[in-house]
Image 1 (cartoon, rainbow, N blue to C red):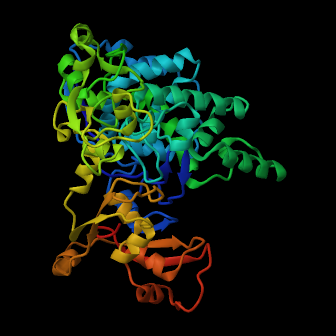
Image 2: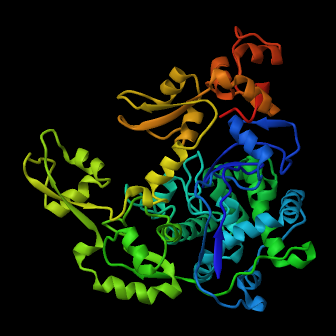
Image 3: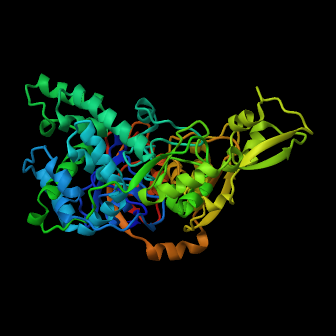
Length: 544
Protein backbone atom coordinates (compact mmCIF):
# COMPACT_ATOMS: atom_id res chain seq x y z
CA UNK A 1 0.00 0.00 0.00
CA UNK A 2 1.36 3.40 -0.93
CA UNK A 3 1.04 6.48 1.24
CA UNK A 4 1.18 9.88 -0.38
CA UNK A 5 2.12 12.83 1.80
CA UNK A 6 1.02 16.00 0.06
CA UNK A 7 1.44 18.98 2.39
CA UNK A 8 -0.18 22.22 1.32
CA UNK A 9 2.58 24.76 0.83
CA UNK A 10 1.25 27.72 2.84
CA UNK A 11 -2.38 28.05 3.88
CA UNK A 12 -4.45 29.40 6.75
CA UNK A 13 -7.81 28.62 8.27
CA UNK A 14 -10.42 30.98 6.96
CA UNK A 15 -11.69 32.01 10.35
CA UNK A 16 -8.59 31.51 12.43
CA UNK A 17 -4.88 32.04 12.72
CA UNK A 18 -3.86 29.34 15.16
CA UNK A 19 -0.82 29.13 17.33
CA UNK A 20 -1.58 25.63 18.54
CA UNK A 21 -2.94 25.36 22.04
CA UNK A 22 -3.10 29.16 22.19
CA UNK A 23 -4.59 31.36 19.50
CA UNK A 24 -4.21 34.71 17.81
CA UNK A 25 -7.19 36.47 16.34
CA UNK A 26 -7.47 36.37 12.55
CA UNK A 27 -10.92 37.16 11.32
CA UNK A 28 -12.23 36.62 7.80
CA UNK A 29 -15.52 35.52 6.34
CA UNK A 30 -15.71 31.79 6.94
CA UNK A 31 -14.62 29.80 3.88
CA UNK A 32 -15.42 32.72 1.55
CA UNK A 33 -12.65 32.76 -1.05
CA UNK A 34 -14.46 35.30 -3.18
CA UNK A 35 -14.87 37.99 -0.54
CA UNK A 36 -13.07 41.22 -1.44
CA UNK A 37 -13.12 43.00 1.94
CA UNK A 38 -11.60 41.25 4.93
CA UNK A 39 -11.60 42.17 8.61
CA UNK A 40 -8.16 41.47 10.02
CA UNK A 41 -6.89 41.95 13.55
CA UNK A 42 -3.15 41.19 13.59
CA UNK A 43 -2.78 38.99 10.52
CA UNK A 44 -0.12 39.94 8.01
CA UNK A 45 -0.93 40.65 4.35
CA UNK A 46 0.40 37.22 3.32
CA UNK A 47 -1.96 35.62 5.81
CA UNK A 48 -4.79 37.56 4.21
CA UNK A 49 -3.57 36.35 0.82
CA UNK A 50 -3.45 32.78 2.06
CA UNK A 51 -6.94 32.94 3.53
CA UNK A 52 -8.39 34.46 0.35
CA UNK A 53 -6.48 32.75 -2.43
CA UNK A 54 -5.49 29.36 -0.99
CA UNK A 55 -7.12 26.42 0.72
CA UNK A 56 -9.05 28.02 3.59
CA UNK A 57 -9.07 25.06 5.97
CA UNK A 58 -5.38 24.56 6.68
CA UNK A 59 -4.21 26.77 9.51
CA UNK A 60 -0.47 26.37 9.57
CA UNK A 61 2.58 26.28 7.33
CA UNK A 62 3.56 22.95 5.75
CA UNK A 63 7.26 23.13 4.86
CA UNK A 64 7.91 19.54 3.73
CA UNK A 65 7.71 18.33 0.15
CA UNK A 66 5.51 15.42 -0.91
CA UNK A 67 6.82 11.93 -0.26
CA UNK A 68 5.29 8.71 -1.58
CA UNK A 69 6.36 5.29 -0.36
CA UNK A 70 5.09 1.82 0.37
CA UNK A 71 4.39 0.44 3.83
CA UNK A 72 3.03 -2.92 2.71
CA UNK A 73 0.36 -4.33 0.42
CA UNK A 74 -2.73 -5.53 2.21
CA UNK A 75 -6.37 -5.65 1.16
CA UNK A 76 -8.61 -3.30 3.12
CA UNK A 77 -11.82 -4.65 4.61
CA UNK A 78 -14.06 -1.68 3.84
CA UNK A 79 -16.77 -3.02 6.16
CA UNK A 80 -14.38 -2.63 9.07
CA UNK A 81 -11.88 0.03 8.06
CA UNK A 82 -10.63 2.67 10.49
CA UNK A 83 -13.53 5.00 9.67
CA UNK A 84 -16.03 2.35 10.73
CA UNK A 85 -14.12 1.91 13.99
CA UNK A 86 -14.14 5.68 14.59
CA UNK A 87 -17.80 5.85 13.62
CA UNK A 88 -18.70 3.38 16.37
CA UNK A 89 -16.80 5.46 18.91
CA UNK A 90 -18.44 8.83 18.16
CA UNK A 91 -20.39 10.18 21.13
CA UNK A 92 -20.73 13.95 20.75
CA UNK A 93 -24.26 15.23 20.00
CA UNK A 94 -24.47 17.07 16.68
CA UNK A 95 -26.69 20.14 16.95
CA UNK A 96 -27.76 21.76 13.70
CA UNK A 97 -26.05 24.97 14.67
CA UNK A 98 -25.37 27.48 11.84
CA UNK A 99 -21.68 27.58 12.75
CA UNK A 100 -21.45 23.80 12.41
CA UNK A 101 -23.43 23.80 9.17
CA UNK A 102 -21.08 26.39 7.65
CA UNK A 103 -18.02 24.28 8.39
CA UNK A 104 -19.66 21.06 7.23
CA UNK A 105 -20.77 22.65 3.96
CA UNK A 106 -17.20 23.63 3.20
CA UNK A 107 -15.81 20.14 3.81
CA UNK A 108 -18.58 18.57 1.72
CA UNK A 109 -17.76 20.93 -1.15
CA UNK A 110 -14.04 20.02 -0.95
CA UNK A 111 -13.77 16.21 -0.90
CA UNK A 112 -10.25 16.36 -2.36
CA UNK A 113 -9.11 18.15 0.80
CA UNK A 114 -10.51 15.31 2.92
CA UNK A 115 -8.68 12.81 0.72
CA UNK A 116 -5.44 14.72 1.09
CA UNK A 117 -5.48 14.84 4.87
CA UNK A 118 -6.64 11.22 5.09
CA UNK A 119 -3.64 10.07 3.05
CA UNK A 120 -1.38 12.05 5.36
CA UNK A 121 -3.09 10.53 8.40
CA UNK A 122 -2.98 6.97 7.11
CA UNK A 123 0.21 5.70 8.80
CA UNK A 124 -0.68 7.25 12.16
CA UNK A 125 -4.46 7.08 12.54
CA UNK A 126 -4.64 3.50 13.83
CA UNK A 127 -2.13 4.29 16.58
CA UNK A 128 -4.04 7.42 17.60
CA UNK A 129 -7.36 5.55 17.75
CA UNK A 130 -5.75 2.81 19.85
CA UNK A 131 -4.38 5.35 22.34
CA UNK A 132 -7.68 7.21 22.60
CA UNK A 133 -9.56 4.00 23.31
CA UNK A 134 -7.02 2.99 25.98
CA UNK A 135 -7.64 6.32 27.68
CA UNK A 136 -11.43 6.19 27.31
CA UNK A 137 -11.50 9.34 25.16
CA UNK A 138 -14.20 9.84 22.51
CA UNK A 139 -12.98 9.05 19.02
CA UNK A 140 -13.96 12.46 17.71
CA UNK A 141 -10.55 13.46 19.06
CA UNK A 142 -8.90 11.27 16.40
CA UNK A 143 -10.06 13.93 13.91
CA UNK A 144 -8.59 16.85 15.87
CA UNK A 145 -5.21 16.79 14.02
CA UNK A 146 -7.15 17.58 10.83
CA UNK A 147 -8.32 20.83 12.41
CA UNK A 148 -4.94 21.55 14.03
CA UNK A 149 -2.41 20.70 11.33
CA UNK A 150 -4.11 18.84 8.46
CA UNK A 151 -2.36 15.77 9.97
CA UNK A 152 1.13 17.02 9.19
CA UNK A 153 3.79 16.40 11.90
CA UNK A 154 6.09 18.98 10.29
CA UNK A 155 3.45 21.72 10.34
CA UNK A 156 4.24 24.88 12.28
CA UNK A 157 2.67 28.28 12.81
CA UNK A 158 4.19 31.71 13.28
CA UNK A 159 2.71 31.57 16.77
CA UNK A 160 5.43 28.99 17.59
CA UNK A 161 3.11 25.98 17.55
CA UNK A 162 4.51 22.83 15.99
CA UNK A 163 3.59 19.28 15.12
CA UNK A 164 0.50 17.28 14.32
CA UNK A 165 -1.23 18.43 17.54
CA UNK A 166 0.18 22.00 17.31
CA UNK A 167 1.77 22.54 20.72
CA UNK A 168 3.51 25.78 21.62
CA UNK A 169 6.85 25.22 23.42
CA UNK A 170 5.60 25.92 26.94
CA UNK A 171 2.53 23.70 26.74
CA UNK A 172 4.62 20.99 25.08
CA UNK A 173 7.07 20.95 28.00
CA UNK A 174 4.20 21.06 30.46
CA UNK A 175 2.88 17.80 29.02
CA UNK A 176 6.10 15.89 28.65
CA UNK A 177 7.42 16.81 25.22
CA UNK A 178 11.19 17.09 25.35
CA UNK A 179 12.64 19.88 23.19
CA UNK A 180 16.35 20.39 22.55
CA UNK A 181 18.95 20.75 19.80
CA UNK A 182 18.62 17.12 18.73
CA UNK A 183 14.91 16.48 19.16
CA UNK A 184 11.48 18.14 19.39
CA UNK A 185 8.81 15.95 20.95
CA UNK A 186 6.08 18.22 19.65
CA UNK A 187 6.72 16.74 16.19
CA UNK A 188 7.20 13.18 17.45
CA UNK A 189 3.97 11.35 16.67
CA UNK A 190 4.09 9.21 19.82
CA UNK A 191 5.23 11.89 22.27
CA UNK A 192 2.83 14.53 20.96
CA UNK A 193 -0.13 12.14 20.92
CA UNK A 194 0.60 11.16 24.52
CA UNK A 195 0.88 14.85 25.41
CA UNK A 196 -2.36 15.76 23.63
CA UNK A 197 -4.21 12.99 25.46
CA UNK A 198 -2.80 14.14 28.82
CA UNK A 199 -3.74 17.75 28.12
CA UNK A 200 -7.25 16.89 26.93
CA UNK A 201 -7.88 14.67 29.95
CA UNK A 202 -6.77 17.53 32.19
CA UNK A 203 -9.08 19.98 30.38
CA UNK A 204 -11.98 17.53 30.45
CA UNK A 205 -11.65 17.27 34.23
CA UNK A 206 -11.08 21.03 34.58
CA UNK A 207 -14.42 21.71 32.84
CA UNK A 208 -16.35 19.05 34.79
CA UNK A 209 -16.65 16.57 31.94
CA UNK A 210 -17.74 18.98 29.20
CA UNK A 211 -15.81 18.01 26.08
CA UNK A 212 -16.80 21.03 24.01
CA UNK A 213 -15.46 23.41 26.65
CA UNK A 214 -12.32 21.27 26.91
CA UNK A 215 -11.79 21.52 23.16
CA UNK A 216 -12.36 25.27 23.16
CA UNK A 217 -9.73 25.53 25.90
CA UNK A 218 -7.31 23.33 23.93
CA UNK A 219 -7.54 25.98 21.23
CA UNK A 220 -7.49 29.19 23.27
CA UNK A 221 -6.48 28.25 26.82
CA UNK A 222 -8.47 27.25 29.88
CA UNK A 223 -8.16 30.72 31.42
CA UNK A 224 -9.86 32.42 28.50
CA UNK A 225 -12.73 29.92 28.42
CA UNK A 226 -13.21 30.12 32.18
CA UNK A 227 -13.37 33.92 32.05
CA UNK A 228 -16.02 33.73 29.32
CA UNK A 229 -18.04 31.34 31.50
CA UNK A 230 -17.78 33.64 34.52
CA UNK A 231 -18.88 36.62 32.44
CA UNK A 232 -21.96 34.72 31.29
CA UNK A 233 -22.73 33.49 34.80
CA UNK A 234 -22.65 37.06 36.14
CA UNK A 235 -25.23 38.00 33.51
CA UNK A 236 -27.37 34.90 34.25
CA UNK A 237 -26.62 33.54 30.77
CA UNK A 238 -25.91 29.89 29.88
CA UNK A 239 -22.29 28.79 30.16
CA UNK A 240 -22.23 26.07 27.50
CA UNK A 241 -19.81 26.39 24.58
CA UNK A 242 -22.39 27.70 22.10
CA UNK A 243 -23.39 30.54 24.43
CA UNK A 244 -19.92 31.85 25.27
CA UNK A 245 -18.37 35.03 23.91
CA UNK A 246 -15.11 33.53 22.64
CA UNK A 247 -12.67 34.62 19.93
CA UNK A 248 -13.89 33.95 16.41
CA UNK A 249 -11.20 31.37 15.78
CA UNK A 250 -12.35 29.37 18.82
CA UNK A 251 -16.00 29.78 17.85
CA UNK A 252 -15.09 28.13 14.53
CA UNK A 253 -12.66 25.57 15.96
CA UNK A 254 -15.12 23.30 17.77
CA UNK A 255 -17.69 23.36 14.94
CA UNK A 256 -14.94 22.26 12.54
CA UNK A 257 -14.34 19.13 14.60
CA UNK A 258 -18.06 18.42 14.97
CA UNK A 259 -18.56 18.91 11.23
CA UNK A 260 -15.82 16.38 10.47
CA UNK A 261 -17.32 13.92 12.96
CA UNK A 262 -20.75 14.29 11.34
CA UNK A 263 -19.31 13.60 7.89
CA UNK A 264 -17.48 10.50 9.17
CA UNK A 265 -20.68 9.36 10.89
CA UNK A 266 -22.89 9.55 7.78
CA UNK A 267 -20.75 10.11 4.68
CA UNK A 268 -23.32 8.66 2.30
CA UNK A 269 -25.86 11.31 3.26
CA UNK A 270 -23.40 14.00 2.18
CA UNK A 271 -22.24 12.19 -0.95
CA UNK A 272 -18.74 11.71 0.47
CA UNK A 273 -16.59 8.64 -0.11
CA UNK A 274 -13.93 8.58 2.58
CA UNK A 275 -10.43 7.53 1.59
CA UNK A 276 -10.10 3.91 2.75
CA UNK A 277 -7.69 3.21 5.60
CA UNK A 278 -7.27 -0.27 7.01
CA UNK A 279 -8.08 -0.91 10.65
CA UNK A 280 -4.71 -2.34 11.59
CA UNK A 281 -1.29 -1.12 12.56
CA UNK A 282 1.14 -0.46 9.73
CA UNK A 283 3.88 1.00 11.94
CA UNK A 284 5.88 -0.51 14.79
CA UNK A 285 7.73 1.29 17.56
CA UNK A 286 11.25 -0.18 17.59
CA UNK A 287 13.65 0.15 20.53
CA UNK A 288 17.09 1.10 19.16
CA UNK A 289 18.87 1.22 22.53
CA UNK A 290 21.14 4.24 21.97
CA UNK A 291 22.01 7.01 19.52
CA UNK A 292 21.88 6.03 15.85
CA UNK A 293 22.64 7.89 12.64
CA UNK A 294 19.37 8.28 10.71
CA UNK A 295 21.04 7.44 7.40
CA UNK A 296 22.29 4.18 8.91
CA UNK A 297 18.81 3.48 10.29
CA UNK A 298 17.23 4.11 6.88
CA UNK A 299 19.70 1.73 5.25
CA UNK A 300 18.91 -1.00 7.77
CA UNK A 301 15.16 -0.48 7.30
CA UNK A 302 15.41 -0.44 3.48
CA UNK A 303 13.90 3.05 3.38
CA UNK A 304 15.11 6.27 1.86
CA UNK A 305 16.37 8.82 4.35
CA UNK A 306 13.39 11.05 3.55
CA UNK A 307 10.96 8.21 4.20
CA UNK A 308 12.52 7.45 7.57
CA UNK A 309 12.50 11.11 8.60
CA UNK A 310 8.87 11.49 7.48
CA UNK A 311 7.85 8.74 9.91
CA UNK A 312 10.13 10.09 12.66
CA UNK A 313 9.75 13.88 12.40
CA UNK A 314 10.80 14.57 15.99
CA UNK A 315 14.53 14.33 15.24
CA UNK A 316 16.06 17.70 14.35
CA UNK A 317 19.49 16.52 13.19
CA UNK A 318 21.33 13.72 11.42
CA UNK A 319 21.03 11.29 14.32
CA UNK A 320 18.68 10.48 17.16
CA UNK A 321 19.14 12.28 20.47
CA UNK A 322 22.08 10.75 22.41
CA UNK A 323 19.99 10.99 25.59
CA UNK A 324 16.86 9.52 24.04
CA UNK A 325 14.18 8.82 23.15
CA UNK A 326 15.73 5.67 21.78
CA UNK A 327 13.00 4.46 19.44
CA UNK A 328 11.97 4.73 15.81
CA UNK A 329 8.66 4.24 14.05
CA UNK A 330 9.14 1.81 11.15
CA UNK A 331 6.84 0.02 8.70
CA UNK A 332 5.84 -3.26 10.31
CA UNK A 333 7.04 -5.17 7.26
CA UNK A 334 10.59 -3.78 7.70
CA UNK A 335 11.09 -4.43 11.41
CA UNK A 336 12.57 -7.95 11.36
CA UNK A 337 15.32 -7.11 8.87
CA UNK A 338 16.02 -3.84 10.68
CA UNK A 339 16.44 -5.55 14.04
CA UNK A 340 18.70 -8.21 12.52
CA UNK A 341 20.95 -5.58 10.96
CA UNK A 342 20.97 -3.39 14.08
CA UNK A 343 22.05 -6.29 16.28
CA UNK A 344 25.16 -6.75 14.11
CA UNK A 345 26.33 -3.14 14.61
CA UNK A 346 29.00 -2.38 17.18
CA UNK A 347 28.60 0.78 19.26
CA UNK A 348 31.14 2.60 17.09
CA UNK A 349 29.33 1.57 13.90
CA UNK A 350 26.14 3.35 14.95
CA UNK A 351 27.75 6.69 14.08
CA UNK A 352 30.62 7.82 11.90
CA UNK A 353 33.67 9.19 13.74
CA UNK A 354 36.36 11.70 12.96
CA UNK A 355 39.64 12.27 14.82
CA UNK A 356 40.12 16.02 15.12
CA UNK A 357 43.31 17.86 16.16
CA UNK A 358 42.51 20.91 18.30
CA UNK A 359 43.84 24.16 16.80
CA UNK A 360 44.77 27.45 18.43
CA UNK A 361 41.61 29.50 18.94
CA UNK A 362 39.34 26.46 18.99
CA UNK A 363 36.57 26.11 21.55
CA UNK A 364 34.11 23.31 22.13
CA UNK A 365 31.33 25.46 20.73
CA UNK A 366 33.32 26.26 17.59
CA UNK A 367 34.19 22.60 17.05
CA UNK A 368 30.60 21.50 17.67
CA UNK A 369 29.32 23.99 15.08
CA UNK A 370 31.96 22.85 12.58
CA UNK A 371 30.79 19.22 12.77
CA UNK A 372 27.05 19.91 13.27
CA UNK A 373 26.98 18.36 16.69
CA UNK A 374 26.69 19.78 20.19
CA UNK A 375 29.12 20.42 23.04
CA UNK A 376 27.54 17.94 25.43
CA UNK A 377 28.08 15.02 23.06
CA UNK A 378 31.75 15.94 22.45
CA UNK A 379 32.28 16.19 26.20
CA UNK A 380 30.55 12.87 26.77
CA UNK A 381 32.49 10.98 24.09
CA UNK A 382 35.86 12.42 25.12
CA UNK A 383 35.25 12.35 28.89
CA UNK A 384 35.72 16.12 29.18
CA UNK A 385 34.51 17.98 32.24
CA UNK A 386 34.08 21.71 31.79
CA UNK A 387 35.01 23.63 28.64
CA UNK A 388 38.82 23.67 28.72
CA UNK A 389 40.60 22.08 25.73
CA UNK A 390 44.27 22.26 24.66
CA UNK A 391 45.66 22.92 21.19
CA UNK A 392 47.51 19.92 19.76
CA UNK A 393 45.36 17.35 21.55
CA UNK A 394 42.89 15.17 19.66
CA UNK A 395 39.13 14.82 20.00
CA UNK A 396 36.93 12.02 18.71
CA UNK A 397 33.94 13.65 17.01
CA UNK A 398 30.75 11.79 16.02
CA UNK A 399 29.72 12.95 12.53
CA UNK A 400 27.00 12.21 9.98
CA UNK A 401 27.62 9.21 7.73
CA UNK A 402 26.31 11.12 4.70
CA UNK A 403 26.57 14.74 3.59
CA UNK A 404 24.32 16.95 5.69
CA UNK A 405 22.19 17.97 2.72
CA UNK A 406 21.21 14.30 2.34
CA UNK A 407 19.17 14.59 5.57
CA UNK A 408 16.50 16.48 3.67
CA UNK A 409 14.01 16.78 6.53
CA UNK A 410 16.44 17.77 9.27
CA UNK A 411 15.87 21.15 10.87
CA UNK A 412 18.88 22.68 9.09
CA UNK A 413 17.85 21.38 5.67
CA UNK A 414 14.23 22.50 6.10
CA UNK A 415 15.56 25.96 6.95
CA UNK A 416 17.99 25.91 3.99
CA UNK A 417 15.16 24.98 1.63
CA UNK A 418 13.06 27.85 2.95
CA UNK A 419 15.89 30.39 2.81
CA UNK A 420 16.93 29.34 -0.71
CA UNK A 421 13.44 29.74 -2.12
CA UNK A 422 13.42 32.33 -4.91
CA UNK A 423 11.22 35.34 -4.22
CA UNK A 424 10.60 38.71 -5.84
CA UNK A 425 13.27 41.31 -5.21
CA UNK A 426 16.90 41.24 -4.11
CA UNK A 427 18.17 38.65 -1.61
CA UNK A 428 20.42 39.76 1.26
CA UNK A 429 22.21 37.44 3.69
CA UNK A 430 22.44 39.24 7.01
CA UNK A 431 24.56 37.97 9.91
CA UNK A 432 23.06 38.83 13.28
CA UNK A 433 25.27 41.00 15.50
CA UNK A 434 25.31 41.30 19.26
CA UNK A 435 22.47 43.56 20.39
CA UNK A 436 20.41 43.10 17.22
CA UNK A 437 16.66 42.64 17.42
CA UNK A 438 14.34 41.48 14.67
CA UNK A 439 12.58 44.83 14.84
CA UNK A 440 15.84 46.78 14.37
CA UNK A 441 16.95 44.60 11.44
CA UNK A 442 13.54 44.95 9.79
CA UNK A 443 13.57 48.74 10.12
CA UNK A 444 17.10 48.99 8.76
CA UNK A 445 16.14 47.02 5.65
CA UNK A 446 12.68 48.62 5.27
CA UNK A 447 10.81 45.33 5.60
CA UNK A 448 8.62 44.00 8.41
CA UNK A 449 9.82 41.74 11.21
CA UNK A 450 7.02 39.32 10.32
CA UNK A 451 8.44 39.09 6.78
CA UNK A 452 11.90 38.23 8.09
CA UNK A 453 10.37 35.60 10.36
CA UNK A 454 8.51 34.05 7.42
CA UNK A 455 11.56 34.01 5.14
CA UNK A 456 13.62 32.27 7.84
CA UNK A 457 11.14 29.74 9.24
CA UNK A 458 10.78 31.57 12.55
CA UNK A 459 8.03 32.93 14.74
CA UNK A 460 8.14 36.74 15.03
CA UNK A 461 8.84 36.46 18.76
CA UNK A 462 11.65 33.91 18.41
CA UNK A 463 15.05 34.88 19.76
CA UNK A 464 17.87 35.60 17.33
CA UNK A 465 21.51 34.89 18.17
CA UNK A 466 24.77 36.60 17.18
CA UNK A 467 26.28 34.82 14.19
CA UNK A 468 22.91 33.57 12.94
CA UNK A 469 22.34 34.17 9.21
CA UNK A 470 19.03 35.66 8.14
CA UNK A 471 17.73 35.91 4.59
CA UNK A 472 16.12 39.26 3.75
CA UNK A 473 14.32 40.09 0.50
CA UNK A 474 14.10 43.70 -0.58
CA UNK A 475 12.01 45.04 -3.40
CA UNK A 476 13.90 45.52 -6.64
CA UNK A 477 13.19 48.78 -8.43
CA UNK A 478 13.96 47.07 -11.77
CA UNK A 479 11.05 44.71 -11.25
CA UNK A 480 8.61 47.35 -10.08
CA UNK A 481 6.63 47.39 -13.32
CA UNK A 482 6.46 43.61 -13.30
CA UNK A 483 5.23 43.57 -9.69
CA UNK A 484 2.50 46.07 -10.56
CA UNK A 485 1.32 43.90 -13.44
CA UNK A 486 1.01 40.89 -11.13
CA UNK A 487 -0.59 42.79 -8.24
CA UNK A 488 -3.68 41.28 -6.65
CA UNK A 489 -5.34 43.99 -4.60
CA UNK A 490 -7.66 43.37 -1.67
CA UNK A 491 -9.45 45.86 0.54
CA UNK A 492 -9.07 45.06 4.22
CA UNK A 493 -10.20 46.60 7.48
CA UNK A 494 -7.43 46.64 10.07
CA UNK A 495 -8.09 46.95 13.81
CA UNK A 496 -5.45 49.14 15.46
CA UNK A 497 -3.58 47.42 18.31
CA UNK A 498 -1.90 48.87 21.36
CA UNK A 499 1.53 50.17 20.36
CA UNK A 500 0.62 50.61 16.68
CA UNK A 501 1.72 53.73 14.83
CA UNK A 502 1.27 55.00 11.29
CA UNK A 503 4.82 53.94 10.37
CA UNK A 504 4.46 50.50 11.93
CA UNK A 505 1.21 49.76 10.10
CA UNK A 506 2.63 51.14 6.84
CA UNK A 507 5.68 48.89 7.18
CA UNK A 508 3.60 45.84 8.06
CA UNK A 509 1.39 46.15 4.98
CA UNK A 510 3.94 47.63 2.55
CA UNK A 511 1.95 50.80 2.00
CA UNK A 512 2.79 54.47 2.63
CA UNK A 513 1.63 56.67 5.50
CA UNK A 514 0.23 59.08 2.94
CA UNK A 515 -1.96 56.32 1.49
CA UNK A 516 -3.27 55.43 4.95
CA UNK A 517 -4.16 59.10 5.46
CA UNK A 518 -5.94 59.32 2.11
CA UNK A 519 -7.90 56.07 2.49
CA UNK A 520 -9.15 57.03 5.95
CA UNK A 521 -9.36 60.87 5.73
CA UNK A 522 -7.10 61.22 8.77
CA UNK A 523 -3.79 62.89 9.55
CA UNK A 524 -0.59 61.36 10.91
CA UNK A 525 -0.58 64.20 13.42
CA UNK A 526 -3.46 62.54 15.25
CA UNK A 527 -2.86 59.60 17.60
CA UNK A 528 -4.21 56.21 16.60
CA UNK A 529 -6.46 54.60 19.22
CA UNK A 530 -6.49 50.84 20.01
CA UNK A 531 -9.61 49.36 18.44
CA UNK A 532 -9.78 52.04 15.74
CA UNK A 533 -10.62 50.59 12.31
CA UNK A 534 -8.51 51.54 9.29
CA UNK A 535 -9.29 50.82 5.65
CA UNK A 536 -6.29 49.63 3.63
CA UNK A 537 -5.77 48.52 0.05
CA UNK A 538 -3.19 45.71 0.02
CA UNK A 539 -1.36 43.92 -2.78
CA UNK A 540 -1.53 40.39 -1.37
CA UNK A 541 0.98 39.01 -3.89
CA UNK A 542 3.71 41.40 -2.82
CA UNK A 543 3.17 41.61 0.92
CA UNK A 544 4.63 39.83 3.91
